[in-house]
Image (cartoon, rainbow, N blue to C red; front, side, top):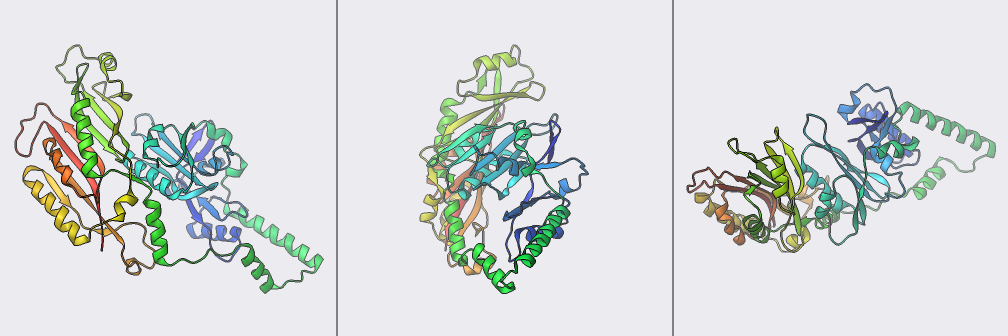
Length: 447
């Protein structure tokens, strides 16, 4: 996405690549530019990474200079070495967008320069960044509510950062340049080097020069596929999670004891919580204005709303209002705690799968999907991993009166999404209620 900010064209959602190979970084960057047919790229002469426009942005015909948002952030001394920029952008008359730029060790992190369209994906990306960034980092942007998703054992601070600040931060070092310019600089360097070598009578031959380059840029030590997979599991293990057996009862107590069904004449319509994690998670509550209601206005809602309501936002022609709340779900848990003692795949299917089957007579949906390998597999494939972690999504939907059933869920089952729908005019029956609940999560196993 290319944003015009006070006349400067700032690019979000670029594609980034790590440069590997025996050639010089400039040659490797030029080669990738030819491979992807990139009209403009970001690269510095000695940098071991480069970026280019996404396919959608590459189609745009922009004659002005383009500046990489990620490269701009990486050049602000007080923000680096580690930073995550997360910004909620609300275009007029369109759904909100979420701009994300991740910086690790002073350089854009591959896979974390994105433009997202929903909060659930944003929560996943934010938690994934926290697992891949080893040290402390700063959360930039206008979304401090993402802090509860971060690891609690690290110092992560929120730094307000607006789009206007990119006008100053985006300097010459963030400019995207045409690959031909990069190639031209490379040719000039080669000609200059050739002149120096001829003048000084360089005593090294090609073999000596290549040996020197190998000493200057030694290849990283080779790790076995199992070691790379274990490292991936260790990184993912730092992510906060919520165990279904403890988080759902805590959420139920909050809903029953604290959530008002009527606020200033407005009725509760739904509650949604994405990216659920402990010790607290962010939920969105939606209240609606019944058509026949008299005397209820925006002002009556604001005057009557709870102290813990935050970010009220009226919508749908002032017939609905959204607020957010931080819901405490118990002590902090991490995925590594879940992965320590996992059942075998058949045991999970027999135990947890059977529990879900028992719920089906009273629930609309209770299903455990097929298991698959969890995490990032090495290029060699799953066969080279002796005992990979397996995971499968699960889902339960039905009347909220069955929420006590979650207490019997195994410790290998975590919650990802909680959604509640309220219809006080509904007629209850076995599978219907005035309060309907949908819970989605992940179950883990290891053979």
